Image (cartoon, rainbow, N blue to C red):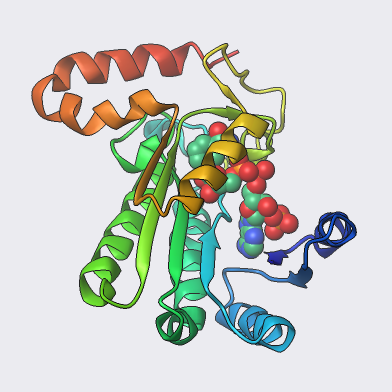
Length: 237
Ligand SMILES: NC(=O)c1ccc[n+]([C@@H]2O[C@H](COP(=O)([O-])OP(=O)(O)OC[C@H]3O[C@@H](n4cnc5c(N)ncnc54)[C@H](OP(=O)(O)O)[C@@H]3O)[C@@H](O)[C@H]2O)c1
């Protein structure tokens, strides 16, 4: 397993834990916004393991701001560069190896890739873009690689909220908005993701009721929009 992000010290700690528990792991400092950095991550992966059979697209950044309150529109660029272009860079760097091994791409995405959410215009747009990109790949390369999407609701126990960008394009910090009781615990979330990947599921919804969003959007659009507005406002402190 190759662990890739910008904070290589933390990755090394996790990698050591994996290795001391019988796994085989390396950490590679990677910034997904740089294609050179993604190419290096793939080169190091090949050097350590000789092949690549899965690519998990997990790097992401969120936001919490109504569009009409945004004072720094570069927020859209920052979010897109990581969530969308960063994923494209990782796929571009690894696609030849994935094709050779009938590999699997798994996108850790969100309910906000299925529909817009208040306070998340750029985030939702970046995840919709990722969805369209991966759907195209599935059509073009479906006979050589497989693509899976993990649609997550609100998950507690990660830094996504503290790192989310506010209206001025800066991180909002961890005191801005709280998780309600509907948020899923990170451990149960990761267990479900691993189980879904092992079964090679094409779509994984956590929590499972998210699977009704596409249908509700078709037949109960007004009700769904009201509901999403309400539950999102309950997340405000
Ligand atoms: N938590 C939720 O409620 C939730 C809900 C729906 C979807 N998701 C999705 O789950 C994924 C993981 O989020 P999380 O909740 O675990 O948030 P998180 O704790 O903030 O983790 C984000 C991860 O992305 C990495 N990252 C950010 N920018 C990067 C860059 N330029 N290059 C490389 N890595 C980068 C971070 O590592 P470094 O900072 O070390 O680079 C970190 O490991 C995201 O794609 C998010 O959209 C989360």
